[in-house]
Image 1: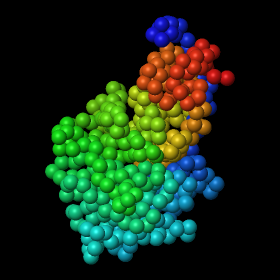
Image 2: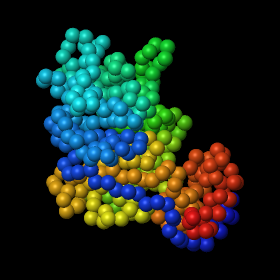
Image 3: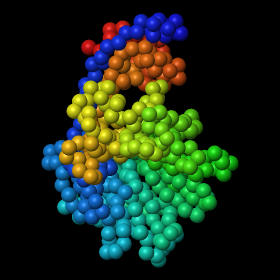
Image 4: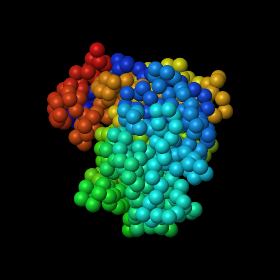
Length: 410
């Protein structure tokens, strides 16, 4: 195996992979896109503190009364449920959007405050639309909140406060943090017997290196992979699973010093998207691929054949469809971007359409692809199943080199 590896690198073959280039769609100025459906036909987001929007492929953008200081407007995989928070009188309350663009408020009475005036916020929705997560608070006291099939649940931990940031595709796994003097990562997992969420910490008091370090900001559709942001101790983003533990996603040398947050993860854990905030410079979106590492999202897209974005700065990526095909966020640097920038959607193409010879998906076929392939192959990573027979073996090596030696895919 090492001999094949060495011979392939020595060959120095370089060509252009023949995968279909990504497609960039502008969604309009002064908008922040925060949700996208599985088929990319619907994008949701907000314009400002008083106006939200939904964009459809067939009808373009439509605005409607906003959710007031929204963290986002989120949609289920099929677009049948749209959730955010909106003013119920003077109280900010979690809500779902009706067909006529009015809001239906979710229950705001929780077991910890049965008689109090509770404010509630939405931070995510499950792909199947059954589960909405966020937080509820009275004054400075806040508790993670879940509305599962319309029923409110409180998320408890060891600490004084909890917060839910993201939810798996079926609503059974919720991730976020708790606070008791320091911030700690945690999950809550649905228990069919008790019909409630069980507390399941990811870090605990014995792991001082993780204290105040990360906030868990995303979870894969399956609930297996969890991603997070930064804290005072370690500025980089992370990915975590029960099997692998924490993996630091690294940094982009040209942008250092900087802090990183991960926002989206593919269901196989091989691709993570997020945002970097350089200490000196403009925020940018990034992409990380297992076996390849992290690079600016714009550089990756250009390498994949996307044109017409030379002057653009992709300042953020906020959401991704479950299969990784559609991503949404914000960009600037264009002549009509304005001060607040514009929202975008990018169609990455049919899943699995990328050329296996360009294994690291940098737009060329060369020795770096061989290195990336063998990193994945030796780890029995699902991405190394080039012949798609369900196993990782010598057949995948043969299939990879057949495409690689041809200089690309026909």
